[in-house]
Amino acid sequence: MEKTITIKSPATIANLVCGFDILGLALEEPYDVMTLTRKDAPGLTIKHIDEYGLTEKPEDNVAGAALLALMEAYETKLGFELTIDKRIKPGSGLGSSAASAAGAVYAANKLIENAFSNDDLIRFAMNGEKVASGVKHADNITPCLLGGVTLIRSIHPLDIIKIDAPELFITVVHPQIEVKTSDARQILKEDISLKKAIRQWGNIAGLVAGLMQKDYELIGRSLEDVIIEPVRSILIPAFDEVKAKCIEAGALGGGISGSGPSIFMLNKNQETALIVEDIMKNIYTRVGIEFKTYVTKLNTKGITTL
Amino acid sequence: MEKTITIKSPATIANLVCGFDILGLALEEPYDVMTLTRKDAPGLTIKHIDEYGLTEKPEDNVAGAALLALMEAYETKLGFELTIDKRIKPGSGLGSSAASAAGAVYAANKLIENAFSNDDLIRFAMNGEKVASGVKHADNITPCLLGGVTLIRSIHPLDIIKIDAPELFITVVHPQIEVKTSDARQILKEDISLKKAIRQWGNIAGLVAGLMQKDYELIGRSLEDVIIEPVRSILIPAFDEVKAKCIEAGALGGGISGSGPSIFMLNKNQETALIVEDIMKNIYTRVGIEFKTYVTKLNTKGITTL
Image (cartoon, rainbow over all chains, first blue to last red; front, side, top):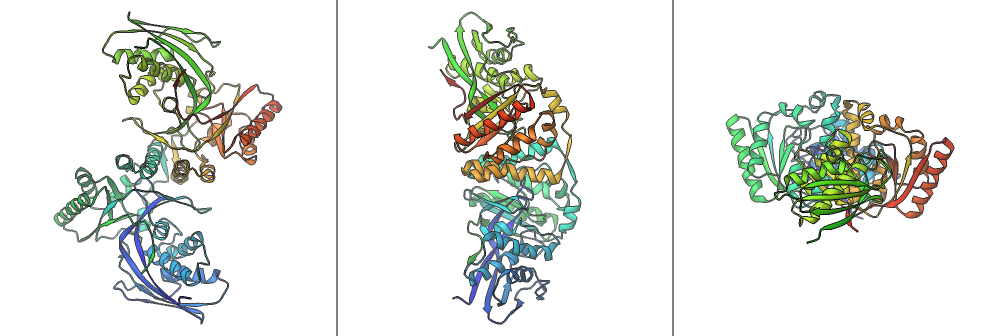
């Protein structure tokens, strides 16, 4: 039996425009690299070999909390040594904590002959998200683990569906400002108008149908969020300009990644994705905010072994 | 060129559980039968050969208003004679007015060599709905015309998508009470909680994915409406009991057809659909309300020529 495994755990986009809290997708890049070794002696040690100064104390570490949940559920006593090379910047809105949490339990499951189901792994990994943000959400964990576009129909009970999608090129810009998830949650209104809700669910149905029918035009028309984006986008400088100019240049559509500050755009081909990247670069250079961009693809496999 | 055409225009279910205002489907039965004859002399005459005593004055008749809109948009002057054998009872919640409106313009379009697109026909037919209920809605017209399960992603601009679906057997009970569409609209709240909206859009995404993946279990789990049904179902005697017992007996799920009073249940096979019919009959017999039931299938073709 394998005793050591090295995996790639990808960045993800949650709150896919109209699909707030239910739809997410996985990216080819960026990704974290993690190496996990199984030990016979109980216990968990964690080592970060990146620049982010994250805690290595298992119960306070995102990957650690997820692994501890798995270890508690596993009948046999065992130990792990985990090395994390985090490349997805924490706080980017690209599922950095989910990559740690899901990556750790995926790797562990491989070393115990896949004793647990994907649903189990998602539940364990949610303990990591709790450490990261105080909320046990699965919005990023699910696409990270499964790849592609994923739907969380329900969280209690957990009901997860993979949605077929065509090839998509994705451009991301991460303006280097801080948007706290808790702030982004707080500014949302508790009530919304039925009229807007109906428009939103028309778009969600259109987006799911468009992805499954591989109808790029329909995907583009459905990438509209009349509820969350108008409120949250005020926290992200130049959001409206970025979005409008990228769509004008041919992007299908896009919005806030997770709760921000990253902005993403979906594109039909790489050419457009590169043009869109230039637009993003030009705007943030002019505005004078540090940024990082990615041009990548929809990741259909999720976490993979290296 | 054909001068006379006879068509079947099917009953439809709008507000498909979680898909309020956006999702609908067509039934094999009941249906209206309409015969339209093209005349060279301008003008429109309408004759009803049914028992419902509906007006035959073109501008006040549902089919008439739809036809007049088509005739106005058509360059050449022409006239029609329409005979309507209405078999879908008005006020049943099964799209009786849509069958008239959509059937009339479908038939007319066949007699003018399909001069108009489906989107045009839907817009003409909406004039009939305006006569019927005061609101230009397309919820029933769309599945009536196109068949199958249809999504109205947006009404302005009109954006209509046909959703692939597996074979479905549908049981309908029409308790012979009156629910006015205007009352059913009035009792809805203008605002809803974001929390419930998220649950609803998870279900909508699940329903669309379930239909397209032909996953009956997922369809069943997604047939939940936490927003409209809890409010409107109080207008329909025995609704909760009918629904609970039908699902217990194996129905995938169901709800209020349109704005009621008919209740429908989707089933995977005919056996279950017939068991469900018995349950409905028993309940309304006991309650002492007159009723009519239908056991039918998803109609994949919409309006057809006889």
